[in-house]
Amino acid sequence: MWVAIPGGAEPDPQQLDITLVASRRLEGVVLTAAGKAAPGARVWIVGGGREVRSARDAGRLLETFTDSEGGWFIADIPPERNVAVRAKLGLLEADPFPAPYKKPPTLPIRMKLAETATLRGLVEDLVTRSSVGNARVRVVPEPRDGRTGRLATTNARGEFVMEGLLPGGWLLTPSKSGYLKAEAQSVTVTRGGETNATVQLDPGDVFAGTVVDQAGKPLRYTRISVKGTPDGTEKKVSRGASVNAAGRFRLTGFERGVYVVTAWRKGFRTVRTDALRRGDTDLRFVLRRRTR
Image 1: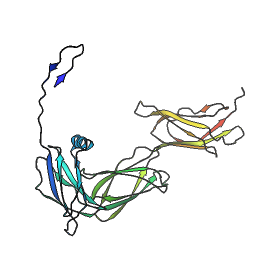
Image 2: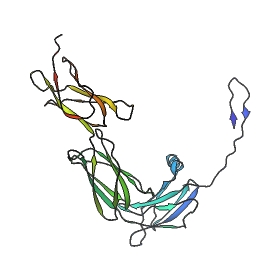
Image 3: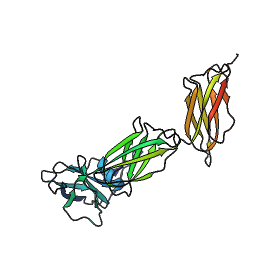
Image 4: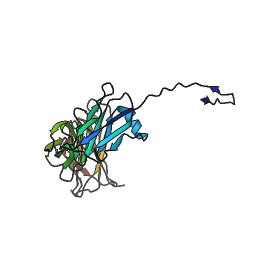
C-alpha cells in the first residue's frame, strides 16, 4: 500500500498485515409441530453484537428461506460471535436456537414451529384512570435469549395488541409526552395463549386552570408556559400550551421541583405566579388590557 505525502515528496511504502478468518456456517431443518417439513419458512441470525449488525448492513446474507424439504443454510456468519437462529412461518415460530462459537451446536439444527402468543393491553392515566391514546408501548425479552423486542401504539381507547410473540417473560414499558418515565412491568406469555395487561402512566405534577379577562370572559389562545427545575437536578424544564375555547389549560408530566407559570397574550399584561413547589390544578389568571 502506498501513502501519499503532502509537498510532493516520494511516498513511503507501508506494509499492512491482514489476517483472514473463515466465516461460520450453520445449517438445519425447520419442521411443523407435526414433525413435517416446513418449506418457505424464514430463517435468520440474531445476536452477535456490532459485528453481526455491521455484516448485515454491508449486505452479507444472514437470513434465508427453507427449501421444499425444510432445509436451510447460512454460510456468511461472522466468526467468534455468540448468535442464535430464528425461524418463522406466518404466526408460527420456533424458539430461538443458541449457537455460541465456543460450543457450536451439532449440525443440522432441528427447529420446530409452534403457535405464538398474543399480548393485549390497556394504557391508562394513573390519577384519572382514563385511557391514554397514542401512547407508545415497548416490550423487550427478559431474559434476552434471542427474542426480539416489539413496539406498538395505543388506539384512541388506550388499547394495544401484539401478535406473534414468543413465549416467556417480557418487560412492558409505556411512554408518552406529558407523562413521567414509567417503570418496566413484567409480563409472561404462553404459547397459543392470549395475555392481558394494564399499565399506567403517571402525569406527575400537573399545572391547570383558567385564563379570563377583567370581565370574566375566557381568553382563548392565551399562551401558558411552565418553567422550572426538578429537585435534585440542574436541568431547566420549559413547556407550553394554549388556552382552549373555555379558557382552560392543563400541562402534565412535571417532576417535583420549583416552577413558575406564566400567562401572556398580545394586547394584555403578562401575569405569572410565584415559585410553586408542587403542581396546582386550580390556577386562575386574570389578564388586563394594556392601555398604551
